[in-house]
Length: 419
Image 1 (cartoon, rainbow, N blue to C red):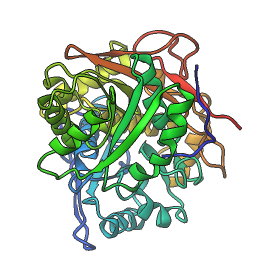
Image 2: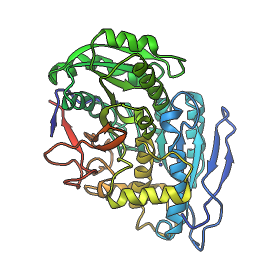
Image 3: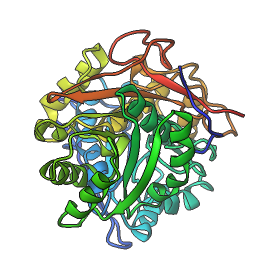
């Protein structure tokens, strides 16, 4: 068990796929369904799921890959009998990382009575969307979220991954200590409010883990070079640089700092992690994943890889943003496993409330039980990893696991906030 010192704040099938082309009239929002409209013998009414996602915009590099995952998941489910005999349609809408567009997407989904449930992969716009959805009678099941005023707070939002505070943030310091670092700094995204919100936690978090905090920097994901920032970090003698930016920006940051002679550790957690980081020779990373590790040998993860290889082989599925969408959709499938011939939005709520200590065999970081009228339990567990010599591996510590996997690469570690 990882001990921390913070009060809690909280920081996606038939051989032929399904398609539904829908155009939203508001703010240029666009919706697409995954696959073709053949259900391979599934004759019951379709179960339609709305995926709100930033396929384009400032946070796209950490959010967009969930679209390909949702397409593969839909094809895989429909190939294997659908959900209780119902074919599945996943309608994917790009919010473009824009609040007004995201709100239009959400309103379109709510206005369509056939959309039974939503899932969200939109780190830039989740607050704008939740201000509307909190008053609507529709469940939002995962995938990745950051705001403590949404995840764990709103009763129609069902968390499936850590919401940033405190889990993601504190994993950054625990992982630094685990690799022997002594001086900690961070380079954070300038575009996402949640990045800035974490900065006031840095100094006390470092102190409680026995690390020296030497300051932090904010950078734009579109900056052409990070050489100046790398030089500033090196002048501080930091031996652990926490990367709190998108994977695309992170890759460029690592390359620029390497070119300037930095040889210490990098920290990458949640949306900053991507398998493409292995292409930077000599990079050493440590941190936590909000979505299950894509490299795991466990059967449910092999199933994920097999589905992606078969149905979406060109999609990037090797990042926690992608795996968190798969887990969220799997939770929807589990909640509707026994649904009747005419499923409704209420059936989704009833199915979620009927789950007890559910972790999808280790695809969720902890066992979840949802209670009617209350926010979801805080997700205080995370998959710890390290990247050395171009290979990802589990860095799970000794002690109990947050989910049902006692040992192995799906085992998680949990934080314990005081108070």
